[in-house]
Amino acid sequence: MAAHRKPKQSPLGGQAARTAATLALASAATATVFEGSGQAAPRSTPAQVKAEVDRLYEQAEVATEKYNGAKEKADRARAAFDRLRDEAARRTERLNRSREALGTVAAAQYRSGGLDPAIQLALTSDPDQYLERAALAEKAGDRQAAVVSAVRRELVAVRQLHGESEGRLRELKAHEAELRRQKATVQGKLDAARALLARLTAEERARYEAAVAGRDGATGHSSAATTDRADRASAIRGPVTAPNTRAAEAIAFAQAQLGKPYVWGATGPSAYDCSGLTQAAWRAAGVSLPRTTYSQINAGRRVSRSELAPGDLIFFYSGISHVGLYIGGGQMIHAPRPGAPVRVAPIDEMPFAGATRVG
Image 1 (spheres, one colour):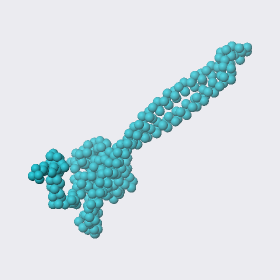
Image 2: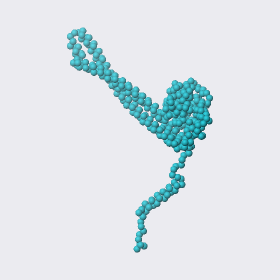
Image 3: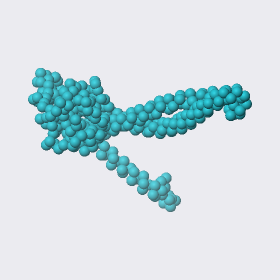
Image 4: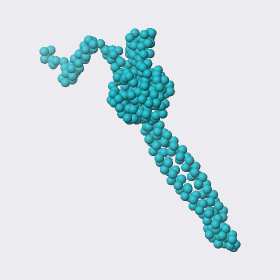
């Protein structure tokens, strides 16, 4: 009887069994790969970390300039809203005064019995008194008409100001929302860069920070030779001969900021971002520049690289996201990025995008 028994069936049907077998093989293959290569992703080299951090900082600077632009627009919208609000308050005060005056006239008419002035005059028996009262009534009528007209004008003006204020308030809220978005982007990029740098060993981090600060970080330790090289890196080679007084004043201001920290969104006096530094330098020379790199490049006459003169603004990267102040000899003063203070640097350390002459 055993020979006639049906073979025991697998609990999985044909298709299900095939699927299970396929999954088992895939799992085995995956396990083999991991056994050979290890579970953890390969550690990035210091050079790879530096390249990625540089990329993140460049992206953070792009977002910083967008933040600066949004802040500039938000500041303008807030100032306009405040002006409209103050004007509306002044107009409302005048409107209330006019209403009070109109109320006084109405109350006087009520007390006089509400009779038309012409009827009251007609009842006067004394001709001289009649003429005198007629003149006064005419003046009172003129004043009343003027008060009514004033009330109407103020009502229209107040309504218009309230409408404009609401529009400015919507604009302000939109710019503030953009401000928050760009701020979050900047902080996200900087946090990602810091997380990457945290993967480096203490020695690798010291070398990286020394290089960013403009020192020769070969050993990661301070030395007289390293300090001397750092001093030379932040020193201006030879006297700066500016083409005019204003350019000289802008350069002198920028020189006085050497060593101050880079802080995104900062315009001085204790810290700067790149466009904040150039704006402050030219402001010291009596020239008002817009806030962002995107606007500053259009704030003067474009010049070619071969035409550069001390005081010119030099812009970098295809997105015009960085700016420095040219000081001659192929050098500029600029605020590089977080961890790198305001310093002198060669203009060829970044991709040149254009230059503008202001003043």
